[in-house]
Length: 116
Image (cartoon, rainbow, N blue to C red):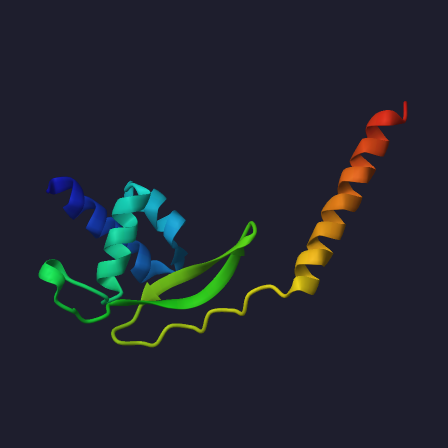
């Protein structure tokens, strides 16, 4: 119980001072991924204890790239609508990304083979 209170205090402090991805909030609060996901679900107002709906306390301010994934950035906001999720990549974008990876792989292999 005490750990939850300390983690909640850290979460409130972090969200008052900026906008963060879930992974960053998880590191600030010292919680596991599952615990932070459960807290985010409750704070976003989907479900409370006993399955009762609760008021939304946080919302998705924007979306950002993290590697190949698009992840939400959270901030405080009571009953504020979420930022729209960006559209998925098109087949053309997937192919372009694959071409870039392939060219980079070829360049790396060529540099390893050529003696300097």
